[in-house]
Image (cartoon, rainbow, N blue to C red; front, top):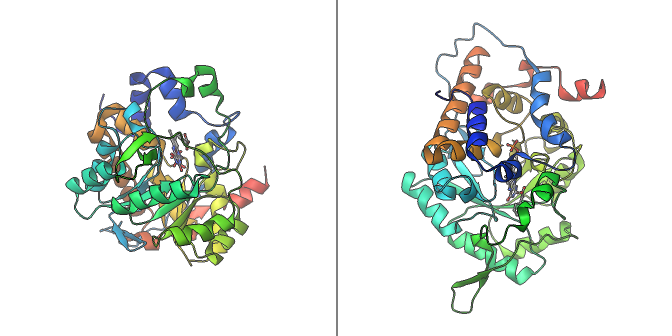
Length: 364
Ligand SMILES: Cc1cc2nc3c(=O)[nH]c(=O)nc-3n(C[C@H](O)[C@H](O)[C@H](O)COP(=O)(O)O)c2cc1C
Ligand SMILES: O=C(O)C(=O)c1ccccc1
């Protein structure tokens, strides 16, 4: 059966993957309340379209940190693509680049960052990449990882701030997933050697005392724009802007870190208000339909990012599958815009959504 929707790729991925690997991708922290909330929240938000606006041609392109993207949809950083399909990170990077979008490369990628950016650029010479960093307690080593990403052509550093410790993923603990020996190598966590080569891989550590002081250190470590991923509180969004970050990603890590964080779409309006247009706001978590993208834009996001749907595309059909996922979502967004009377993503505004998430949230 030809997959028509992102959920069809999910079903196909589940059929194809080893159950423990499926659980790693699909699962989240504790009772997975947040995993479910991220997607189900969209059903509570109604779209109230405008009509007779003659939106015959739609403009989906957006500018994010100096990059023109063909659509307001990018790839969130996700670990271990080679577990999903032999095309791995190179396949997903090629598909995202060919779609005119941007990949955030995970520090926990199973392919070296240099190979990922080269693969993406072979599909589209103008493709942009950002590098996601888990700041390592060893700052000299963190610096080496950052310099490696810079040299590979990444144009921003996305620092994940929702992970001072690793979330409690009980599916993985039951399956013994993380104990599987030699399963994969996070290629970007190799030791820098004096020869300029990369030696043995280190395991990824987390910085338990991660604080705003580390952001000050990052400024000395890189001239790249710094993006904070994992902002959920409007006060932290305000502090992020005051501390000079270039953009924020509103994210609860797809429900994989702290459970019972509200759905990101419910958190977005207050954050967009706090940011007040000063920096781009990317939202991730639970985006499965074009109407989800439209709702995020209406509540103030500049763009959205996809985590699991990219993995589903990869598992179901390699590079081609990721391309299909992006093209389906683009077509859905375009159709939703037409039906809402929007000829440009800039016209997608709050008048189209009801009720505002915080209203429905406070009524729970
Ligand atoms: C399998 C998997 C691996 C992930 N790996 C990372 C990672 O290495 N770094 C990171 O910052 N976020 C990681 N995330 C979180 C995603 O970047 C993103 O926040 C989340 O998946 C968005 O939700 P969605 O899957 O519903 O789209 C991962 C998510 C998944 C599902
Ligand atoms: O699985 C994840 O969500 C994730 O962020 C991660 C962190 C460290 C290593 C591998 C994946």
